[in-house]
Image (cartoon, rainbow, N blue to C red; front, side, top):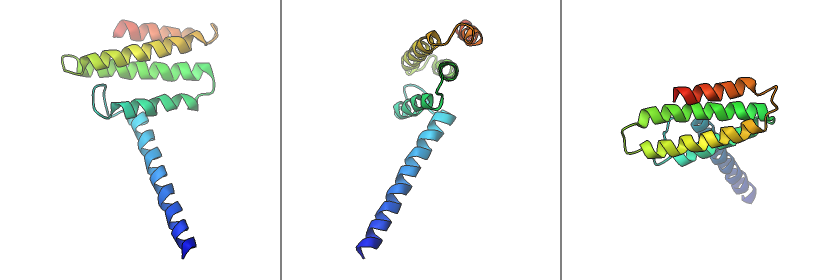
Length: 124
């Protein structure tokens, strides 16, 4: 009886944890929310966990530039709305993070990444 209860409890707990992880991955990948929305901090948290996928500075910097690109799109979407300031703050944070990560990339490997950052800055 106790063994069956513990098994069911463990199964339910594993299911809930798997569900939460699935939601976090979906939020990080699909990016359905924009800065200023109530659940955006959860998406931001999930996106920040994406840096653990890339063990090298080049991959992390590339991922950071992907986030900068998404924050630019968020800013364009939120321009003229009450969430515009939140979108600007999120873009500022993403640019700071990308710049810090690009500083860790060796010069010979970072040319394309730095060019991409300059291109994103010009298009923003």
